[in-house]
Length: 272
Length: 280
Image (cartoon, each protein chain N blue to C red):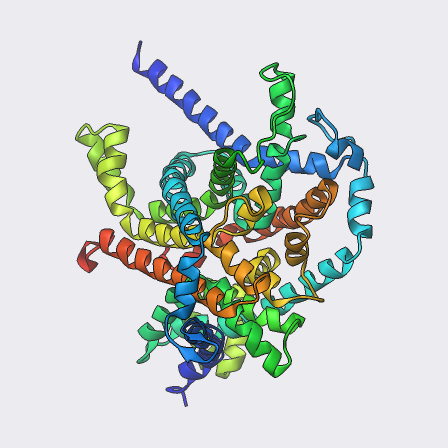
């Protein structure tokens, strides 16, 4: 065997492995979607077919089920609030870390990175009591506060790497041309950073949309979709579970597509 | 004014983290040490003397011990694939990263569709003639199968996080090192083992810490697939908080999860320590 045959065979094995890995990720999602897009009788029936019948009865059953639409709406509200708060607090911090050297910078970075060494959803336990005392119990905003804590470190780290990538000289040029600091930021830096900020906003939305434990602990009447599905796990029929699962998964496909360029910036590893 | 500006910018985030991160953790610690107004380890005693604590603790640790090494291997393989790809790199990276956006509950439901009695695994097995009639995979008698299903779900769901971090880390390693090793006759495996892996330590550290903590937080996947058949620390915390209405014991459980999380973080930091001057 010549060296090229060996190399070509190696390449074929490599491509097969890549395809296999893609199937490993995509196949389970496809199977869930078959269930979501089949009639309830098919979902509980046996054996299963490996393609959907595109019967929307399961979806209609899911959407018509008591509490589902309000749960969906609560999930969206919490996620949007989380998004706004995480970016509102996180982006200025990211900007400060990227642009200034000041005493205490390392301490702040340490605190942000340290949040990851803690199981954050557990925060919900003491907050459940605290929220009752201040009247935030079972509210959308109360849960959004907890979700913001989860999303904030990511928002800080993404915007930090984002602003670091925009040369300070551009801002200086704007300053010498008569802009003040705020104008220089709004007219020069923000347009350049906007797509990245949008991506980190989407990521904050995802964090909140997917969170289960804190949502289940902190909401009772105003349950989010995850809390609703979790608490009805042992009583809900299969079609409801799978349609609900699909409702959670489908947005994820879009989310990850929207943030795909910024996937690397959010882990606190330096990147160039 | 400019000297104060950075602090002003950090103020909202700092206030937030103090109020919703540092403060609640102090409260959990206080709750765990306070039983009906009496200080002491009563809550921990009640937690540890309950018959379920042993299995719960074992299940959680065992799950982490099985999942994390397998996942690390898988993530390294997938990251190497992405790094080596010349065409369609973006598309493959996107597909590999999809589970990153999927919640643990949704992942549990995805794999429930495969493992439930009228599910796709049974359909495929009967279709192929391996078994005559569908088997009950997730019953309370088959804890081994439930455990395997949870391991598969966790592998499927959380490999993406490690993979993304490792791809980022591999991108930081200068190409020249690998090329130099190749010139000296190192095989692909030797280059991976002797060049890539040691230089990857900082990102391995980040990936492992994140993943190990996620492993101790495993919750919705277990409930979706095993119900109460396979208790883990997080589900017991939830159980004590709600069904038993004993916040003190729930807080004690939280402290256990916190303790092992911090313990393993320190351990990983030690084991994969990279001296500052050796960083790429």
